[in-house]
Length: 157
Image (cartoon, rainbow, N blue to C red; front, side):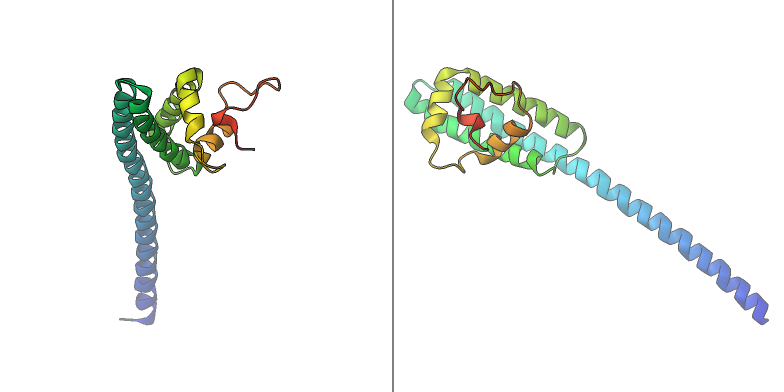
């Protein structure tokens, strides 16, 4: 084989290697993209099940004493969901669904005076439900009026 033929073979080998590397990078990016979306869906299903169970136990408890623990557990689930959205870990439709669910769930709890009273009693310090408060601050359904006192979902400054 002549030196020119060897150089030509080397050139074609290098071009083929570059094409293969670009294809591998594309496959890796696409795989990571799909994995992130699949992970978001799996997490969404888990959060949905935990929230559904929390709502059921809270709504069907026979007294405020019986409702306090399920409400705390429901709020812990909402706290986890808010922390996931706050850090930007969710992707795609799962992110949109979770965002809409949280807006509705927090609105339902804040509009119910008994629930709000029970939640106020759960605060031990300013970090209690900090991710819910951060979520609400960044996405308020109704901006706080200057004439209204802060409530449990608006404490973070």
